[in-house]
Length: 173
Ligand code: S3P
Image (cartoon, rainbow, N blue to C red; front, side, top):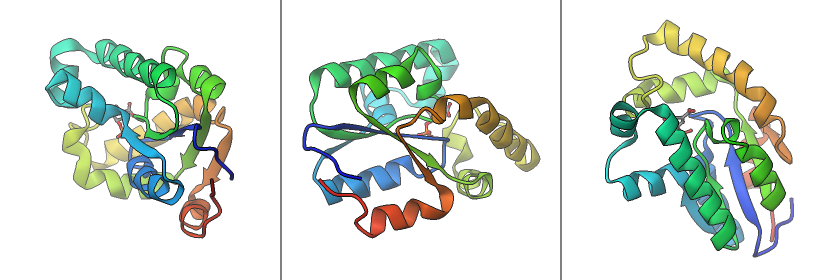
């Protein structure tokens, strides 16, 4: 994969697929600013994601994500962004990202996602109340629902290739 200094790169995929982790690494490799969309949202709101869901509801959260996404698309050149897992599935965001930048789906396996999310459940309103079995089912169900959107990514990196792709300089500017 070759990128330009003005590219807007969007990492998409399920919670726990490594978007923030690999986004930071990639930003060092290709020297583009790293942006964590939900972190920007949380800072601007002055409350965490659980609170936003609780006090203002999911629709409000989705609309704020979209607003911030659109602001970056319009106002900033050259960045790599870790999007929240739901971003491509709401408000036509996937088309917008595809029209203005380069989307990459980190297609991590449900098993790895499950293992990563177990200790981090509490920070994520959609899964924090679920027991292990319910979390497992949730991942499979959401992945099945969201695949239609994630599949529209320009690049799809399979679970087994993610580390190789990012570690072995298969990416350059
Ligand atoms: C969500 C994913 C989270 C966060 C929110 C909802 C989702 O982001 O936006 O908890 O709907 O999949 P991460 O994918 O960064 O965990």
